[in-house]
Length: 106
Image (cartoon, rainbow, N blue to C red; front, side, top):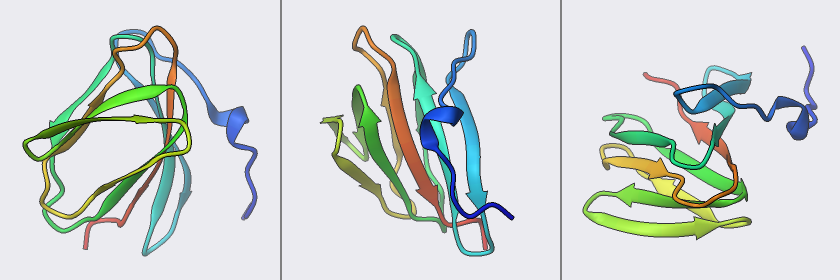
């Protein structure tokens, strides 16, 4: 198993839907990248038993966090505890790159 990954090698795009890829998956944690091109959305959703974070590597995202809508930019961390409806939209004119961590479903 490779324990080190060069994150820029995994940045990508996908027509019509945001791009995501898994970097690491263990029994207690999954780490991946989500890349949203301008106008792309990860629809609001929740994970009943899973905490999740988004670390903004590049760009700017408008996040749903329950009833709130908040903007986060590069080097900011967004926390979505289990059960909180969350999602993100890229309303900017540049790619949004997010490091995402989530506890796998129990």
